[in-house]
Image (tube, rainbow, N blue to C red; front, side, top):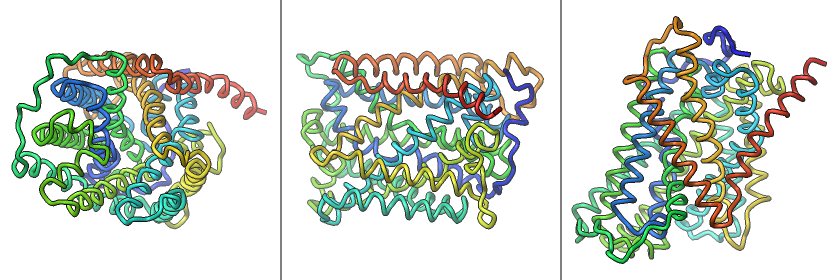
Length: 458
């Protein structure tokens, strides 16, 4: 059943509008820029033998992400409500599609993503401060609890934390660019591809997953639209400005990486490409310093996820599509405290129970691919909702309209479909079925919704 009036989806108004332009822009940058731009260059160098092809992947998915952001900006200005993607899917396709997105976020995707980021943060923390790696689950759990408490105290406080750490990560990327381009004895000749090198299409798919992971997260800012001041005007500015800054920083950082290091050197930098570059100029202290900055970057992304993701469960409960207690707002701080607490408990459980002490990175790497496929598959339908609602509700108020329509959303749809197909194929040929399992889990949500609907009606 299509909802006839998207402006009434959902109908909650318990959360305060306290987030302005700079807070929202810092949030989208803080959520999106986390570990990918610092951690994935080493992975990409081992998968793709061509520096220009790697830069092409960063540029291509940057353009695709900007096209998606331009489309989402129309939806967020049209329906500036808490829940973001959930709200748009419900308006375009009805309750069942919205429920599937929401229950994946509630039960698995968000806790796993947050848990993975917390684990990576703990690994960086242990490395910087020389802490025994046996304490990583404890460090990750304490970090999650501390951020949950901070964000229970209000979205404004949470975005203030995000602003601080976003400034640190932008400063770290700018510092890396300056060092890589001007202080290291590098060469743009590193961009040349070795004549004997051949591209493995399966590995190219895995490389695409790494790049998409780095861009993943920008849409999460739409989930706090219900707490943005004058959201019908500011959301489009927040999304577009944030994405332009992110793409610029990513391309600048990668050009700097390739100027400073050859592809084989990057593939051999097990301690991290940024750390290797900084150590060339400043010695071990430089590597430690940039490691601390990366740790702050991951912390900022983790904080952004803790802020934004519980709003989906909150909106779902407000509309009667999940347990009612998840839709409660704190009487003093006006935050979705029940959803935040449930998400934190589930994430801590994953950190403690699912981490493999023999291979600390395996959980993070698998989950990044697993949920990139699931979340970006949902984004296909979300961007498609722009076209659906243009046809179904041509007279609805749209303070912002996607430019170059329908070319812009079509670029996102075609590019993302190709990217996801490459990822699934690359993982399949390598023996990893986790992306397929994630898609199957999403599809199972439809019969779960049917059961829920029958049960809720009594």
